[in-house]
Image 1: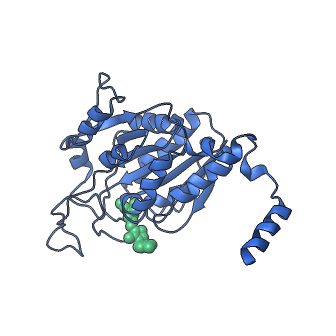
Image 2: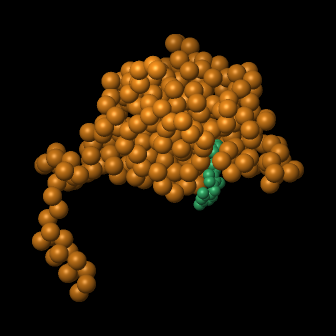
Image 3: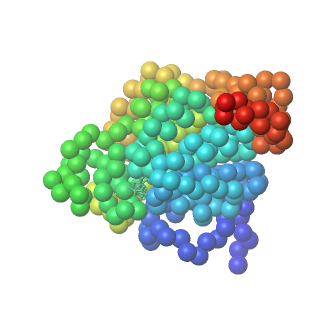
Amino acid sequence: MSERKLFDNQPDDIAWCPGCGDFPIRNALIGALNELNLKETEVVMCSGIGQAAKMPQYIKSHMWNGLHGRGLPPATAIKAVNPGLTVIAEGGDGDMYGEGGNHLLHAIRRNPDITLFVHDNMVYGLTKGQASPTSQRGMVTPVQPAGVIAEPLNPLALAIATGATFVARGFSGNSEQLQNLMKRAIRHKGFALLDIFQPCVSFNKLNGFQWFSRNTYILDASYDPHDKLAAFAKTQEAMPYPLGVIYEEEGRSVFEESIPAYASDKTPLALRKPDMDKLRELIRRKAE
Ligand SMILES: Cc1ncc(C[n+]2csc(CCOP(=O)(O)OP(=O)(O)O)c2C)c(N)n1
Ligand SMILES: [Mg+2]
């Protein structure tokens, strides 16, 4: 048997379909975490519900798995109380842009130093093929028999417009670039969104591996991701969609470092003992 890589819990019961784009995303994540020389005990994976959101169960690290769309609030909170940890939230387009869309806006606004990987297969995979926020107009599904009538959400434009400090897109069919993008997203200080195109082989027959391959191109080295307006213009490109770091802004203050409790004492909140007298007094005053 080959030596186990760090972060690989070698699960024998992965619930993804054969050929699913989630497998190469998992491999790229394990590769990125190893190349960053992180320890399993230094990483926390947070997710909600969906096929993509099962990722924390297939990675050996700390994890939090909760309600649909709720991966980001615990990720922000965990980073706030224990800033030394590397915190990664992961989920699907339905989980993070639909049910969790509200949390996405406010995570971006706060700019915690966490990373979000979204497996964007343009469909609700787990629940068998309903339209998601990124489904293409006209896509026929069991509950949209006449085709989707709404325009797809543009997550990259949304993220730049609301102040995200790192916005990128990868493709599960391009593992080498994906692994590099994951490393850059994790290393970025501030909120990092990496949207990852991923074919759902069972429930999205419209946007398969060939479709993503034909309709994407890799940004070349001359592209500068630091110009916000140019980056926003890049997010408007479709067919082909650009792959790479679309926007990056360094130096913006991050949420956890701005918390007043850290102003004079850098001890992580998670390691401090609660002041029971203060708590009792607070509860007593509330009850008055
Ligand atoms: C509040 C709530 N609404 C709906 C559901 C049903 N549900 C579970 S996962 C999911 C969508 C999953 O799609 P996505 O996030 O794109 O992940 P994928 O399975 O495609 O990877 C839905 C609608 C739920 N569990 N909870
Ligand atoms: Mg999906």
